[in-house]
Length: 229
Ligand SMILES: N[C@@H](CCC(=O)N[C@@H](CS)C(=O)NCC(=O)O)C(=O)O
Image (tube, rainbow, N blue to C red; front, top):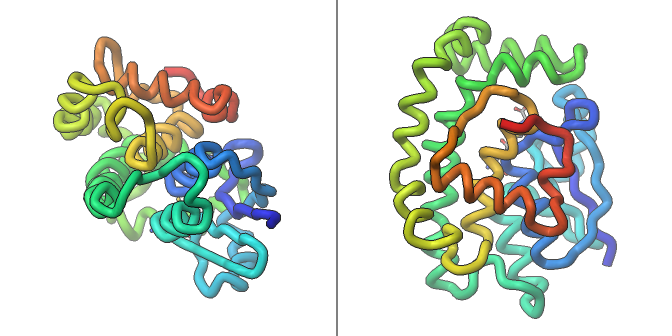
């Protein structure tokens, strides 16, 4: 059955952390999808999904939104392919990683790259992006990002549990990468796609892990337009 993935785009750059989770999950499952770029100003094209966020996956007659729900759908629909979770207990535990990534990791990255996102998106998307994000931050994007040289230290410190885990095992999921890795990698790939600002620096097990993730699936993420930190 033909798959279609709707994903956020700024020109050739695909920069949604949630869409990257699904790009990696599809690659792990060995599933090819037609990719439809969506700009902030194109969101009317998502009306068929009953909501206005990406990623949206269409698989035949099935339409699924929300990255977690899409990952569960792929696991349940294509169980004979490489596992994203492994079993029900691992899926349950992975929910915590999903929530941590959404509420801690992505919230930590967002102020560090927000003006860089603004600079990269298409001009017709900028008024919406500025208004919606300045409402969220309560300040101009330039002012938020201007503090990043200091803020990045707190962000790196917030990664301590991830750093400790990757100091003891090669991937978040253990010996081999799985959906837990794709979730967290999505955040770094988001930033890398749109910002030259190095969120990580060497030596750091997290840096080494990102480098391994960039090489997965024949360099899928590394080959996508982005910056090298
Ligand atoms: N919980 C959702 C979040 C999806 C989401 O917020 N996607 C962003 C792209 S990174 C979006 O569509 N934003 C549109 C907007 O801000 O108007 C998921 O995991 O898929």
